[in-house]
Amino acid sequence: MHMCDLSPFYGVVPPCSNLCCDWLLPGNPASNHSKRTIKQRFLKLLPCCRSRTAPSLSQNSVVEDGELSTVCYRPEGLDQLLQQTKFTRRELQILYRGFKNECPSGVVDEETFKLIYSQFFPQGDSSTYAHFLFEAFDTHKNGTVSFEDFVTGLSIILRGSVTEKLNWAFNLYDLNKDGFITKEEMTDIMSSIYDMMGTCTYPCMQNDAPKEHVDNFFQKMDKNKDGVVTIEEFLESCQKDENIMQSMHLFDNVI
Image (cartoon, rainbow, N blue to C red; front, side, top):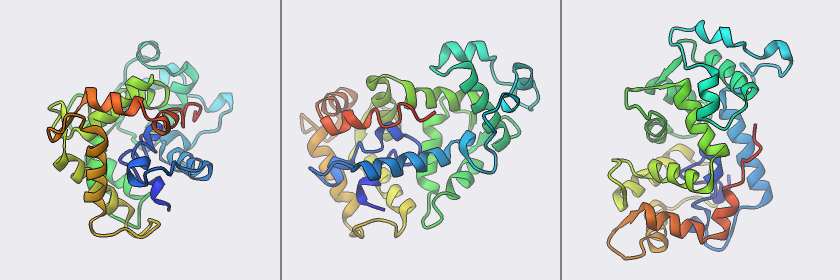
C-alpha cells in the first residue's frame, strides 16, 4: 500500500480519502491507480457490496417496504429517509437489505463494528480507528449505530456538498467535539491509522511519521498559529487546495 492511500478517512470516508495525501507526501497527489484501489476497498466495506451478503440487483432481491418491520429495531419509513438523505428508494432498499444481513438486530454496537472492521485490516490493529469512526456515525450517542445513522452519514459522504463532506470530516477529527482540532487529537487519529495499517505501507513508516504528519497538518491548517484548527480554518484551507477538492468527488458514483 502506498502512503497516499493512508488517511484518517481511509476505508469509510472515501470522498476525503486523499484529504491528507498532500500533507503526507506534499506535492504528490494520489495516482489514478491508487484512487481505483481506494474505491475498491471502500466498496468491500459497504454492507450492500460484501460478497457473502451482497444481494443481486434483480427485482426480487430488493427489499420491500413491509420488510422494514422484520427486525428487532424498526427503522424509519423509506419515505422519511428519502427526505433525509440523497439516496433513491431503490438505493435505500438495497442498502437496508445489506445492513440487515450484516446486523440482524437492526443496530450495531461498537464491539460488533470493530469486529466487522477488523476483517478488512488483519495485518494491523484497527480497533482504535474503528472506535473513532463509530463515534462519528453514532450521532445520537447511545452506543449503537442504526440504519438511519448509517445511511445519513453515508449520504453526506457520498452525495453531500463539499461543505457537508468537510464538516463530516472535521467532526471525525474533533474527537471531543468541542469545535477544535488539537495536535493531541490529530496524533491519536494518525497513530490509530498506522496501527490499523500495520506493515502495509510503502515506503515503510518511521517511528516519528505520525508526528511529522500532524506537524504538516497544522502548518497547513492552523492559520493564526494558536495551536488548534477551527472549522473555519479547516474549510478555508481545504477549499483552496485543488487536490483535496478533486478528492471530494472520488466517490460521487460509487453506488
